[in-house]
Image (cartoon, rainbow, N blue to C red; front, top):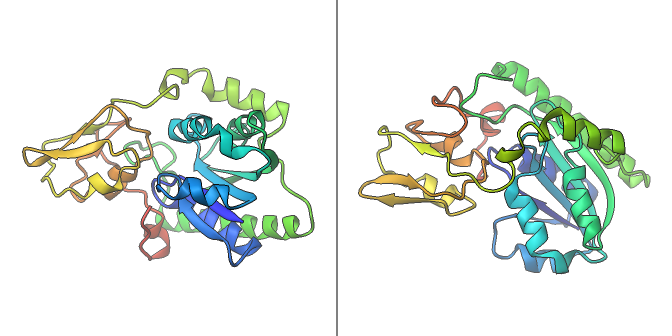
Length: 258
């Protein structure tokens, strides 16, 4: 078994690591952007595949990865895990349909509510204690799901036609242009000191240091990793001011790397 994840603020990483570890203590974990991810997928029959939901869709980097590597999915057994701050609709179904197209066996779908990760918006923001409770509930759900799977029952969240309609008409159609590709809307203010912390964090290698400050390209996948880690709060995307740096480690008191 292998856990594969895209995680901007640490939420999805935690969920995939916990669920995969409960199912197989020997399983390996690998971020989606790691060069070794293809080899690891080829060497494993069962994949726990996790990602955060964006506008009721899987991030473009995730969909692009699945499509570009379509040959490796044949006969793979895949459990799709989608994390979100609120509404998901068919979050797990967004990748499940792609995997099925390329010959994979989709075992099921899981939706897990986590603390909101959009750092430059006041929407969905909660206090530390409220977020800790969200994490406690998420962990309970993951533990219950692991027990169900051990008994041979896989959750099917986000895979039904009703869920598909909810995701499509609830958000995806209205925000269609935001999810059709990578975005060039990442903004870096004059508060940037050129520390370079954001450069290696970006899964798309979309940021570089030029003339003593960070400069963004046009291939942002909206993971919010750079925004949640910038010490100067100089990076924004959907909004113009960093309201809160929404990293998973803030709620558990430990550091995470993705």
